[in-house]
Every structure is written in structure tokens, then in C-alpha cells.
Length: 326
Image (tube, rainbow, N blue to C red):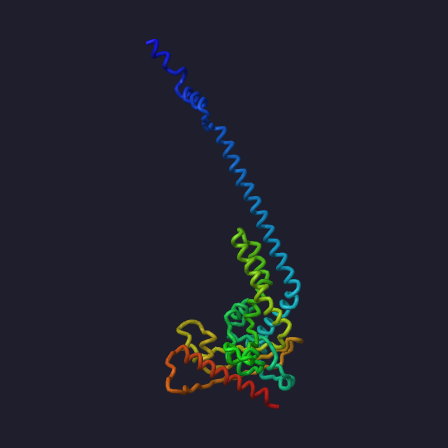
């Protein structure tokens, strides 16, 4: 019995285990040690978040500083031009009575004698019903296309085609579609700067940095060309007609549906230097295309495109005839 008492560890078992662990160099977490370790981890996370936010804010301010520099230079010329263009569109849509009534034909003598049709310019074509506000104009302009009306009416030299480039196209690269100008200058807008300020993580901010780099490399040169070289603004406002509803597939009226049928179109030309109206005409052009060759085109989409081109060139010929009349 005495031997059993000598082999039994002294005190509580847990204390004995702890004593043995310490003798072997082992350690056990205590509540206090756990709190200290947790506090260190939390402090590290807070410090990391603080540093990350500091770096994010620093990068954000650097990007906005670059954007403001471009606004102060290019924006000083583009933004007033943009506002004048939108004002011209809304005035043209409001008409003589402010409710859309057409104000009547008018052609300045300078439009008959000047060579504006061989100069670089801007072009926008849209439905009269869509010209309701600057934002509506910008929305439509993004998807607006430079159609055959501009190609058949204007006479600027097709430099790429003259050089023999296979993708030079039938018409010149001019006029610029107004949507190109909006896209090239989106980085200058308050909306873009606001999105940058709202960027709350590094990945999202990196997207805006890439947009800025692309704009500087590819888009800003286009915008500079627009503000430096454009001499006129050609605007076409198409009036809705019931006949086009059959081509709208049961949905709202579209520009593409209107161009498939003869309809009244209001054509305006503004001189950009003095923001002066040169031409105001209302014409309805309709044309036919006749297929030639052994293989007739059966694809509906291609036939529609050809019909639009025929109608648009017919409209351009009517305007051209008016401008050529003394």
C-alpha cells in the first residue's frame, strides 16, 4: 500500500499533466495568451485595411488628377461644342412653334457656294420623336450609324480608298458619327469621374485605369480631330409614318424600320465655327434597287439593307438637287 501511494502523482491530475508538459518543454494556450494572439491578428487586419484604403485613395486621386488635366485642355473645347450640338438638335426638333411643327425650308446662300460637303464634319441621324433631351440624344447617338445618306450627299475625299486599301470602303471616313465623339470623350464627363470616386476596391479602380489608358491611346486622338477639324454638323430627323410599323416587328418604332419606307425627313446643316444654321429642308426620298446577275439575293436582312441604302441615297439626291439650284 505504501508503494502505491508513492507512485500516485501529487495533487490534481491536470496539474500533474501540466507539470510534465513543462518539463518536456511543451506549452499550453491560456485564455490570456489567446486574447493576446487574437488582438494581434485583429490589429494586423485593421492595419492592413487602413494601408489598403490609403493606397486605394492615393491611386484614385492620382487617376482623377489625370482626368482633370484632360478636362482642362480638351474638355475646354469639346464640352462647349457638345452643348451647342445638343442645343441645335433640340431646337430643330422643337420647330417653329416649340411643339415640333416644321419651320419651312431655308437655304443660306453660303450653303450653295461653300465647299462644306467636301470638308470633315459631324453627323447624327435619329427619329424626331426621340429628340427630347440632351440625355436622350446621347443615348441614341451611341448606337446611331453613318448610313448611305451621308455617303451619297457628302464629297470628302476617301483617303484610305484612294491609297488602295482593301477595307477603305466605298465612302470616306467622314463625317464622324456623333456617337464616336461621345464615346471618345466619355472619360471627360462628370459621370465617369463619379464612378471612379465610387470605386471601392482595387480591382474596380484598375478597370477605370485601363479605360483611361485606352482613351489616351485610342480615343482622345479622335476627339482632338473632332474639335480641331470638324467644320459642320449634319443632322437628319426622321418623322414617323404608319407604313413603317409593319417593319418594327410589333415593337416600338425604330430608325431602321423608318428607313425602309418613304417618309418625311428633316435635314439640317449647321456651321460649327459660328454655330450658324445653313440648311433646313424637309424631303421624302424613296428608291428601288434592281437585282442584276445570275444569282438573286434571297436573304431578307441583306435585301432590307439594300432597300435602306436606295431610300437614303434617293433622299440625298433630293437634297443635293436643292443645294445645286441657284
